[in-house]
Image (cartoon, rainbow, N blue to C red; front, side, top):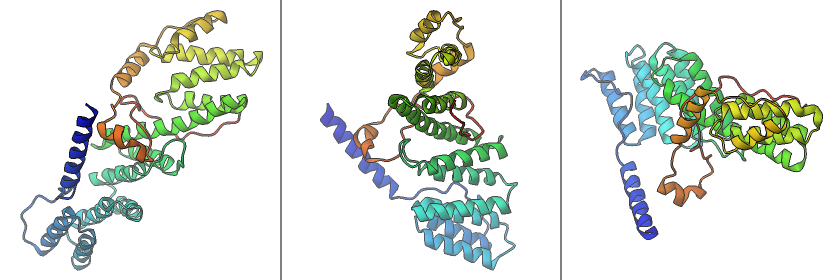
Length: 320
């Protein structure tokens, strides 16, 4: 069975590489049959772009813009230049793509493609994210750029896709905070641990391990002394109310009863949200199982598929 899966995976990988070497249609063509010189130049550039001749694409588009400065295709040409850098995909090319997309938004802020440009800036940093235990520069930048896109263009056709990117970005950010908090708790630095874990609980309610974070937070408060009994009860109460499908649910209820605190009813809306997100988690593909250990990117398969991501940045707080 494993041998057959290996053969299927290798054949599929070879096929995907073969397809990837072919022509990829451009997302923003101009659907007219005009034979004007500027349109001919644009079509030539797009043909080169689809055939991965990126430098020639940019040369032709810059010739178009310089020769016909008043062309009606100016916006499309500038966007195609940015897209050529984006498709090229190297680290240098992605930095150039981001700059070009930002320029496009400056010159053409009212066009629908402006929201697409901002989404692609978010995607550029998303594609360069590392796992939660490594450098988080691109993760934080992706969070910032995705939030900016949604705040500026909430009704864009790209809003839903960007919202999902943001959920996955915030899954990585929350996981990083949780890992630090859990490490502090393990080492006995309970004040620092409670600070991190409380931030995860308050700021990232869609985080797939928020219930575990609350359970660890409650245990941390119990190690900080009797003066933190109310904070411990609050953490357990929130776990029972907001995460009714958590494996820690019964233990949390028992702890509240032992503390002579009321056991809350589950929030119906949170129950439905948690159930939906758990039922719709992404399964790991055969490729992921076989080659996933070669990558450095984060695992976002457990990220939420519904619910509103947080639209503010996490502000560090002072430990209790």
